[in-house]
Amino acid sequence: MKHSLLSALFSLIAIMSFSQVKPDSSAHLSFRGVPLDGTLDQYVIKMKSAGFTHKGTADGIAMLEGDFAGYKQCVVVVSTLKQKNLVHKIGVFFPAKETWSTLSGNYFNLKELLTEKYGTASTEVEKFDTRTEPRDDEGRMYQVKFDNCKYYCIWQTDKGEIRLSIEHESVTSCFIRLVYLDKINSASIRKQAIDDL
Image (cartoon, rainbow, N blue to C red; front, top):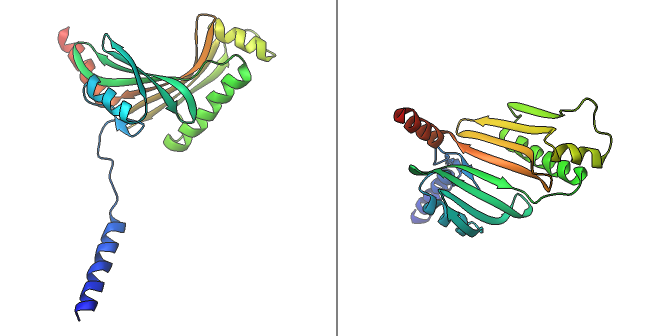
């Protein structure tokens, strides 16, 4: 009797544990499993525990470095509004590339992964703003460096916005940028700006 009662109790516990679905505990957009919320110092501590190296903080922006989504030595920029120390935006800058094939390869790989996770992008632009399509790798990189490459996707989610794009800094560096914007904290910052007016 005692044995069958314990057996039934263990069976019930097992069924209950398998049937429980863990709801997303945060209403905020997450980056590496950490919700975009809290103060900058709090967020930096969480990112350090997630394996990133803190490179410095200035003017409401923290810079970290680490591996992300299978890419080595990414720079992660965590932003707040100075008047309100509340994390609302994270930018990931992937390592610069020298050729269009590697740059676009990274872009399309990340786009595929984001589509798998968030579904089809709500906005997608992939073109060169030139009279004729560049014909080779060198021509495409030239157009990126001179701001004639418009490659970006935006995913709108219930928790915020995710933007993937091909970017450049002057004519020296071409890279992929991924930005996470938390909906709740961005709205809070916008409300404060409107109140100030």
